[in-house]
Length: 178
Image (cartoon, rainbow, N blue to C red; front, side, top):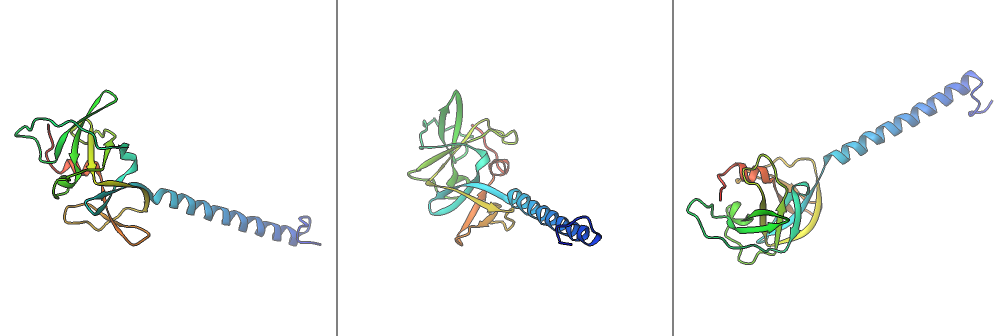
């Protein structure tokens, strides 16, 4: 009798153990792949006057050169508004991300992010200005420690810290209107 012989009682037991062990290994691997895929969150990395920030990749429609049209300042216009930008028959309100986060206005923005419209944001279309874009990065899990401004911090694999910006949260906490 050999181990591959499934006709005898001991051969069937060995075969059953081997099959159960293999199934358990496959099931365990599926759980790990699913957990790893669910925990990752892709972000567009931005430089904001030396500060590293990230915006959820799924919230970004397009990354482009910073082009906008200045507009007359209205008294009720928030200080972060820099102007408007037209893209595919839609008008985007262009905001200086540095000002929205409590910093000084960017003198020479290097990149503009057109955001997807979100029903929870009171404005129809929004664009954000930053100093530059540095590609994408995936963070695992949801960062929990909050900065004083209320935005979570995430640690990157190289040890740097990144402020994670949720556009819905950014605009829901303050009045924004043009």
